[in-house]
Image (tube, rainbow, N blue to C red; front, side, top):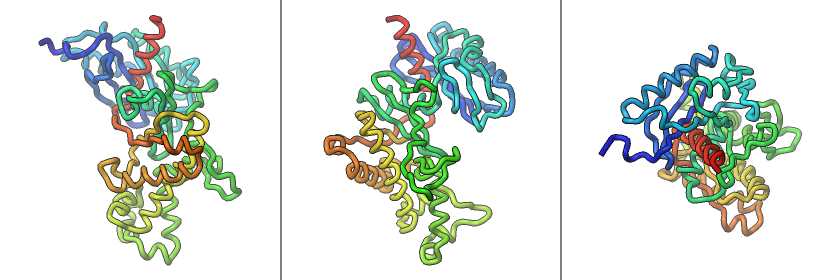
Length: 342
């Protein structure tokens, strides 16, 4: 058996640009990873440096597989927002100051000599989960990425919902609190989901609760934090898993806030499944805390939605982890490639 016989052609490549690393991979037509790697983004330098390195890395990835670059039909690209997807321009991503206003789609197509499908990084991750991850058994899916912020993607029948202004599926900016004292989001607006359900928000809310002498004196977290060990979402998660009452309360409140955002989307989109990705998963389905987090979300959603939506609600954790971005970008390239043949 030749080393490449297990993979279905044509192949597709994915490029997932992050503030720290660029993750790239080659994927076959069934979503199986042929090869992948990553390298530093160099966010203050010209994007050309990273894109040229991507070509060099792809050439090296192909060699051991027994395949050639000609087996790759198209490229998918995901970058942080904001961006102009229609014109292929990355606009002003906070973590990539050297990349502002760069025509990234056309430049990558020129360097890799293949058509490029451009997507928001969270949208690319959503497509990965839809194609071969937690949403693969469903025709429609909403992904929430829970990390420093809250991102997301909406996939319906192989289509990523990107919006007329490239701002579709900005799920972290759903408004869940319209009160005058609503929490301020990182974008500067009040009441957004990200200000309540992100890892940063979890830390902020926990720190505020610890400021209450009655509450703060009863948590094990106070003994753990200091200049060398600042409060973190992981620290709170570990404390909650160990039974710390304040940490458990904070995780449960995070689930409630996220449930409010999901309830809005359930009425607007009515997807078959909601998938939760990102680093903040409280141990996932293998953890009692993770399972409790999902249960608390479902309980809140069912309070707020039509009965049929509550009865059929499906909320699961993502499966692909850090591979979701480049796999999904490659999947979007495949979908566009197939449409071009129709």
